[in-house]
Length: 219
Image (cartoon, rainbow, N blue to C red; front, side):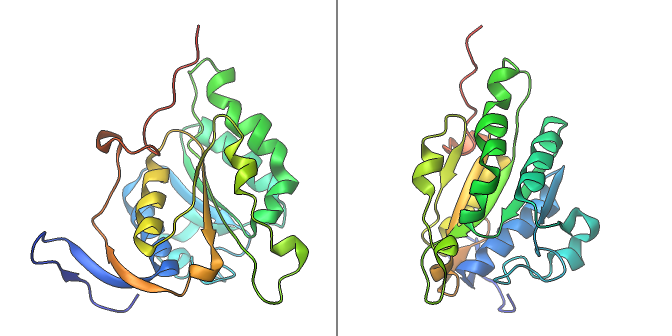
């Protein structure tokens, strides 16, 4: 992200030419800087900067709040559930969406149910970043599109950014949500470059579906 941001004359907002992957990086950077309690972790997200380079530079700039984990999706998601219940806002990466099936119990039986089994006293503001889609040379366990599975889980929000602006806005909104959000990126879009308004931000006051609180369970 070496290009200089310019300000749109009609709005005064900063606009930058970014790839989809760079827009995700910019959103992560903004949330780590601005949102208390955020941490970022997963397989190869820190020192390597992610298998697609999406998290490059974040370990350097945010230190121990960005860290690598062992190859254990259940441990990644299980620890995120506990951290969120204690007030943190974990952003975890599952390298390929296919690998989430290894830890589906943590998503369906644990993460999605925190608000309901606690009668609304606890929340689980976890963001699960992952990517999917077919690509040349990818094997069967690296080529599936599993968004329909997540869409059928009550208590979990699902977003699938299409443009670089979507990738930025939806990820920022997801981090601000008090509910678990699965952000499914498409790796075939990572290199496409577009204009991105960096100030664009979704909050609860903006009425975004991601940031809106879930209904309180009946007493």
